[in-house]
Amino acid sequence: MDELNGKLIACQILITGLIARVANEQRDPLRFLTDFRDEIKAVVNGVNIAGMDSTDRVRAVAQKTVDELFSLMKPPSSD
Image 1 (cartoon, rainbow, N blue to C red):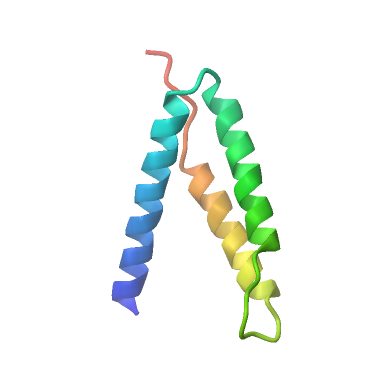
Image 2: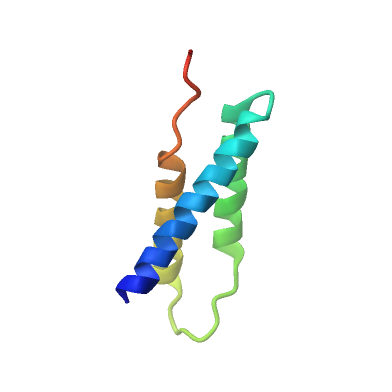
């Protein structure tokens, strides 16, 4: 289980870096990140989760993960 958690954290770091890289190349990085976050949240709300009676908990954890991922991103520095 620890190995799986480590791999998931590594994937989150990689995805955060990729999103930040793309955002930095945009004219308005903050707007890009906000729009992208909203799109990802819409996908999480609409994705079909099979094999479970109640998907509310899984969906809530996914939403929390999206929020945590985007909270790691800081506005561009003024340097």
